[in-house]
Amino acid sequence: MKLLFFTEARLTQTPDKKFYSADQSFFFQMFKRYLKIFDSVLVVARSAMASSNDAVDEATRVDNNGVTVLPLPYYIGPYQYLLKRNRILKTLRHYIDWNSDAATICRVPGTIGTAAARYMFKRKRHYGVEVVGDPRDVFAPGSFSHPFRPVFQYSSVKNLKSVVKYASAAIYVSKATLQGRYPTADKIFSTYASNVMLPPEAFVTDAKTLKSTPPFSLATVGSLSAMYKSPDIAIEAMAILKKRGLRVSLQWLGDGRYRLEMETLAKKIGVSDVISFVGNIGSASEVRAYLDNADLFVLPSRTEGLPRALVEAMARGLPCIGTNIGGIPELLDKQALVPVNSAERLAEKIEQFLNTPVLADAQAKRNLMEAQNYAFDILNARRTKFYEYLKEIS
Image (cartoon, rainbow, N blue to C red; front, top):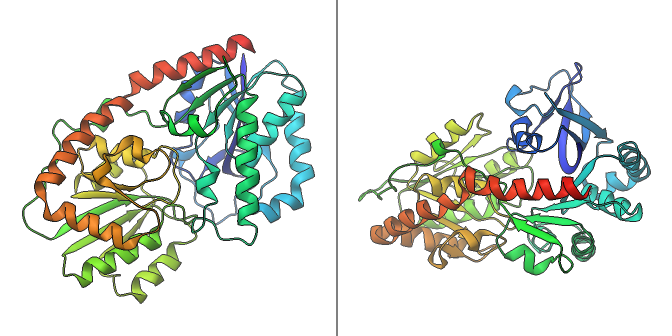
């Protein structure tokens, strides 16, 4: 049986008709877990043609043995979507009608997954949902800047509640947070499994022990394509720490259109000497090397589902600090949480951890133990049950 997979991912198509993703967690390797249950996967996503100057990384190729991309017209943001809405919906519905014998998974929240779910419901067909985030947080003040932000937030929350309620099966990335906000109908198959499934090599044997003297090194991982990861808050927190005389540096792993703006901000407030914007890292082993060289991991996000980067840092035995948002409180101890959009509180928590080795070391040990819950075998079993159930009812 085929699987139709609807996603918000943005892809690039090269002249030789191969498809690549800018998101390093969304590529062919990810779809192997679906191919263990389904004969093939049809990925429905917006796609743009690559220019002659665009460099592509083979590690981020999406289509391959058993995985085919069905492209939608490319757009970024609500305005471009409205301009192409009719073409997008017509193409999406065509893919659904021509693959009436396929099982369907809609990754939500998102415009594409929501549109597919609505059409499936209209056609009285079963569909499953992968609930990977909360639009309530995505469109919260400070996370998204637009005159119609409250409207987008209201409509997105309403849409997500609807598509989950009418789904035939659901899998969430959180243990309880998203389930409480976006419940399924009664007696509908539901389970949870993070998008993060760590292989054995992702784990260290012993948690990190904080060194006794500075300088200290912080690390974080996050795309700079949007401001969801709060790079501005991290930069402001570093300025506070520098003013207090704490010898600490930050390495930001990730790239995107806001990188230059954030580098300019760091220079403007006098912390460009202690912040390094590393850019995208090509492999998991390279990311682990950066984490292993850090003393503390920070994730000041404005919105999250259940963040892969945080789980990976925990698996390296690092003490971690994160915001009290999305699935982060399911991962970290209360002592490691800070409010959203507060550079002052983030700086205070960083200083507390680095000045209190007993606290940092205890959190590091606790994090390594918690990360074991995201080992491949445990999560794969839950995912397999979800896929098998969806295949059976389809």
